[in-house]
Image 1 (cartoon, rainbow, N blue to C red):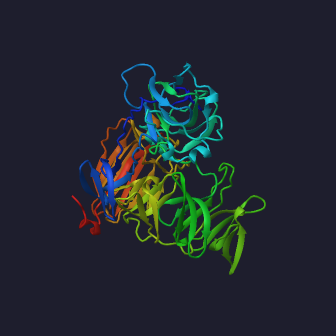
Image 2 (cartoon, rainbow, N blue to C red):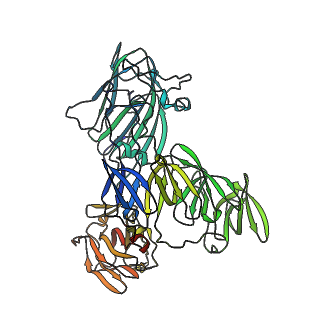
Image 3 (cartoon, rainbow, N blue to C red):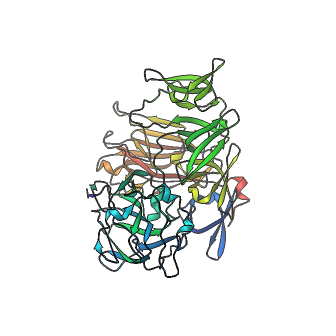
Length: 604
């Protein structure tokens, strides 16, 4: 495996093509059910229709045809944040990228997002200027972006009439440069600096130098460096950044760029993980919980937002464990489906289930109705809650709505409304609403629109027959080895991996018109594997391959399921017993017929 860098740090960066700012064109992005994308500015959204400005014209798109969309904010003005070296832009010159920028004496903030794919990572940064030869930036010139720096208003970053960037007022500088490290694996991809904001942060750290310090085995990684450089005298400074061909970067000076600020937060180490009675989940802390409402404090981008919910909308609540590997898992066998369950740690370290009704919480205790009396349980002992007593029942699992993903990990279900402004309104299905700035949103997914991933539906029945005694439960979105699903050279982020013999039956309720999938044996099985494959709808065989092997050439399936009540996917034993019989239904999705209430509103 190629060797790359583990925690590395660069040499000060504040370069610029004089004050020429390389403009970046941003546009909101809308993905349709057939994979096509529309880029433009989302002007308005109501319950059925989205209006998108593309150039000088606008078009209306039915939300039923939209799979997902995301808002991409515009760049800041030159005075606030300046892109000084664009390491993503194609270059016809060999060697390092360089840039010049005029800086007044004092402290200047900089940002350097960087990502690397394959091969050996290379990163070298030097600085030259008045009375300075080109060399690594001395650690005495580098300082941290701390609370004091972050409190400085963006409007305080200026350029004077002579073209010099003015310094910021920093009273208590702290040495070292801050960084955050991200890693990912295929099929997940990062194709631009701006996509780093959607990768969870693996590690935060600081370094006294801006240089590559250590090496590591991970191939796909990104780092966002933030720092402050102390310029000794007024003048024009030249910065040089040299990387390998598989690395990309951008160098900014001034206020932290808005297009980068939506950096994903690290995995939350405390608080609660809440799932709703409908789709979605919340990560945050409980501020208030009584019979009327439950208030949670959550992260949205870099802000803390309070969300007020009806207690009936909550399904499960589990305390986020500091070290999940050491935490004991509760035994949920025999859990009642009509009573609330509280899982509480005992003095000997075990977890006990108590059934009754959750009344609420105060600052220190869970209020629980048990055997006709209200009891208080110290919150430190509460591991989790499963709420059934007053839970709102889902009216239809095919209702058209959105799942709003916030920067920070929370996903809120509801109906999105937007009318020109910078904020969106989310009307939650159980009542109440939430107003959020549009740039707090990572992405919005349209649930149960025209294209519905089979991986998001639960099979009505699962029948698995082991050849001998070994049973392999089917996997969703990963192979049995925990790797990405792969058929031949094609990798799937969504899919089902099953072992012979497995039969999955899904209820369609006559809601769909087409079933698409790419079938094949999991690539990691090599030449092994021989299975009999069949797709059946309402007892009628739509597809059959009695001997499916690694050499079987199979085009994607496009099957008509119009008016069908059930869909059955069957992978049976073949001629080789069950050796290597690991089969993939790649990107399985159903194309839904338009509901009657949307037909009249459908736009061209």
